[in-house]
Each structure stands twice: as C-alpha cells, then as structure tokens.
Image (tube, rainbow, N blue to C red; front, side, top):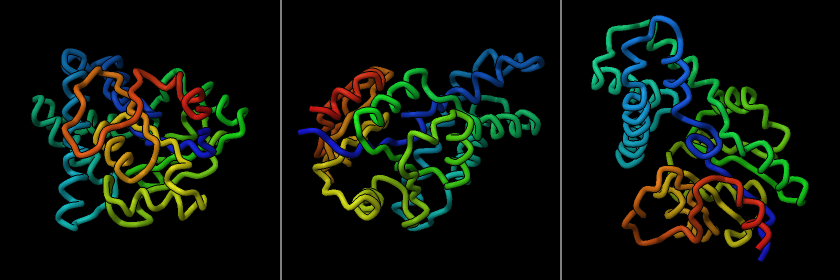
Length: 228
C-alpha cells in the first residue's frame, strides 16, 4: 500500500558525512589530510556511532555534537593527525555544513508533489540538523525534524521510533522509513515501519533479528517505493 509519510535518517542518508573531511583535504596546506582523508572520515563516523550506542546502553546520554567531537578526536589520533587545532576546528565547522547527496532535493520534491509528508528522524542535535538543512537548502520539503534530544536516548531505542507516531498520529505500517545505517533500518523494521536500507557501500546485511524490506544503492527509487 502507499505510504503517506516518509521518514529519513539524516547523517549518511540525506547528508554526506564524508564531505567535511573531503572538503578540508582540498584546501591549501592540508597535504597530510589529503593523503588519508578517506580513512579519517571512515573512523570518525564509526566512532561517532559507537559512542552513541555506548552512551545509550550505559544511560549516559549527551547530545550528538558531543559524540561527533569525541569521535573526531579519536579519529585524528588514530590517523596521526592529532595536535592540529586548526584542522580540528575546520573539520567541525564543515560538519555543520554537510552536503546533501546529489539526488536528495529532486527526490524530496517528487515526494511532496505526490502528496507525501516528509520528516527527518535523527540522532542529531537540533542545532546541528538546522545548520545542515539550511546548508543543503531542503527545509521547504520537510514537514518535521525530529531529534532524539526530545527523548534523551539514541537510536535504535524504541522511544526514538515512537516519536513518529506521536508527531504525526500514524501507525507504524503507514510509514516508509529510510536509513543508510543497516542496523537502523533493521531495528525500524522490527518496530513495524516499512524500511529502506540505502546501502551505498555495498555492505553485507547485518545479522539481526530483523531485516529491511528494501535495499537500494541510493535514494532515487524512494518515491516509487512510497507509492507501492
């Protein structure tokens, strides 16, 4: 059946989390970063997620900007780039201005033209999300931006997915949920959402009790899936 509401994870799904390291590496005087920015971006993202999970299971919540900073500090040390305060500050500034993936604006516009409601459901702190949305110019396509700061725990806690029904009055089966994180798409499927895993890297499916109903390489097929 057609889904009336499409809900998107933000980081890695709508916004390219590698863009900060890539853009910094292109700037003059960043020779060391230019040689290994892909590795920095990879481990930064990994530690950011790991710290969110650890804080969730230990009940030591902080906002996502803190785990983003902590993850970057670990990644800089792990890649031998620590000690450069200017580089650290520049990477964090660029993270607030992440680029949307190229297909995002047209995809969201088509969903809205088809009469769908669109929302973000993200670990991101409200100020982070607001900055990224403004930078990407996609705010006019969004009906709501839901941050885990409302419930004080990171995904994949069920309380996060509960926020969708509380905001829109929808049953889980009315929602198409889209995430680039396989574990997020799987947990949301277990919650009852119809889910799409945007598997840009071609990763293996996570061994979890649930699996996403759909797997795609990018977001171009989302309007079609929402209309099924």
